[in-house]
Length: 231
Image (cartoon, rainbow, N blue to C red; front, side):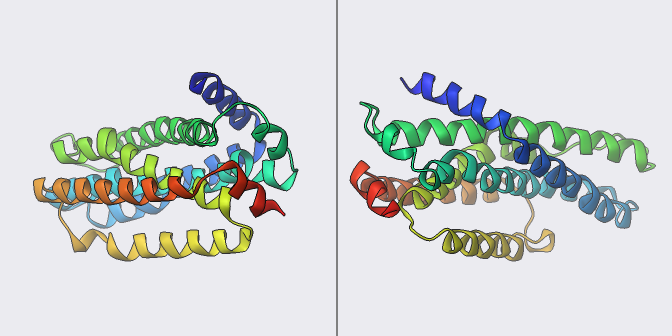
C-alpha cells in the first residue's frame, strides 16, 4: 500500500509546474552564490576543499528544504484547501502511511536533484579555477551528501508535513519555515566549523533528535485531528 501511495504522490509532484519553477530558482541559487565564494578563495586549495565540503553539507540540505516547502503545498496543503482530504481519509488508508508516502516522494526528487547539482558544481569549479590538482570533497563531505543529509531531510520534510496536516493557519507554517532557514544560515556558516569526524557525530545526534521530535509529532497525527484542522 505504501508503494502505491508513494508512486501516486511522486507522479502528482512531477506534474506540478510550480515545482519546476522552484527547482530552477533553487538550482540557480546553488550554482551562482557558492561560485562567487569559490572564486574569492581560489588561491587556497585547503580552503577550497573546506568550501566544497560545506557546499555538499549545507546547500544540498537547503535545496531539498526549499523544494520541500514548494512541494508541501501540492502534496500536503492542497488537499486540505480543496477539501479532497475528506474522501482520502474515508478510505481504509492509514493517515501515517499517507504521510510517509508523501514525505518519501518529496525526498526522492530533492535528493536526486541535490546530488546532480552538487556534482555539477564540482565540475564547474574544477573547470573554472586554475589548480595543479583536481579538487574533490573529503570523505566526510561525501558521507554527508550521500548518507546523512537525506536522513536529516527525511525527518525535516516529515515534520513539515505533520505540522501542515495539523495546522489551521498556513501563515504560521510559512513564518516557521523562514525562521528555521534563517537559523540554519546563522549556525552553519563556513567559518563556524570544519567537517571532520566529530562533526559527523554531531550530525548523528541531530538525526536522533529529529527522529524523537518526528516520533512525538506522529502521535498527534490522526484522521480526526486532520479533519478538525480544516473546520
